[in-house]
Length: 436
Image 1 (cartoon, rainbow, N blue to C red):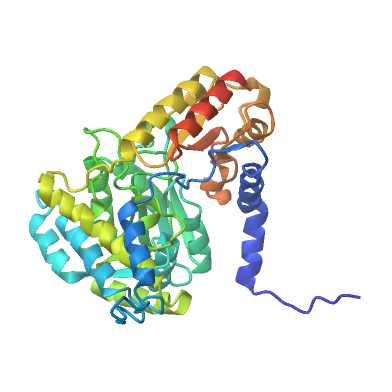
Image 2: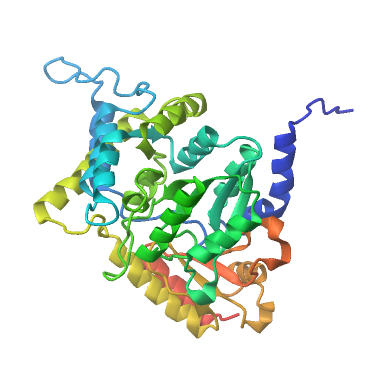
């Protein structure tokens, strides 16, 4: 007889409980995307547009520990451990990127300039690890984390790891997912007044909302008034769709309290490289580095070389073309905007209500009016992937706090638009041809 001799920690058991809810649903839905003939619009990985500059320089770095024609070896450590905080080239490139793409005519310009001198970078093995080490560095048991809902599910996971509580600020689809200072204050009043971090994502995953100046000022006021650190998850910052709604960095309005996360996964369409970074106050970064060293130790050395070159190329382009905006859309942004338009038209014609998509990798629609699935997003996603259209998408159920129970919306679905044009066109054709 088999005897189970392993006794899991209380935290592991808590995760098992969580995974039986939203986690189990996520695994079930994403598994459908791997079925034969299914078009995957569920997971947000781009299948085009990977930075050629980054790839070329990474290839060169990988080979630089080999002997040249003269018998010399350029870098014998090219494929060995990188320094724990990151390679010098990438750290300098990250710092250059944030300093040279900061707009000093917004917010408190003097504070921004001072902050640039006080801040530093840390390279992490993905933005996911960046989130983890920031939570570890700032949170103790019983603390609270505040964010807008729906939210990237890892915010809740990392809050659980740190034995802190997630306080969510519900965004309303019919209001365009816009955040107000009154909404922040209401969430604060419902909390235990132990909020240490406010996590802000713009362009927003999953809704595609791009924060306005008024929203960023509201966050800045809230954080200053309540002694809260702002964690700016701005991984989609160069994927905005409208000139009248550019990406604005939270650090430009709250320089003394903001720590920013970026990643090559979204900035350069290199999600498999797992190269991310943090940029912020030196004291916090040094603490994050300690946890980073215990988690992944260091990030892939030759890939750091490629990302460094790609970041520098953005700054060089800005200098050549005298860009006026701090962060301008990359060359893939227009493709994604057109993808969103194509998919939105197909979804609307099939009975869905599509909400405005201003940036990022995703489009959100309501299936409330589709009677065959009783307006239920989970049923919609299962049926869409299994019958007729064979297109996978994900319900927003895992993007809400399960502790809220029945108050969470049940009709919202997320579609990934970061795919080749032919993929989006085929998905749109199927959705129109096989409406549910």
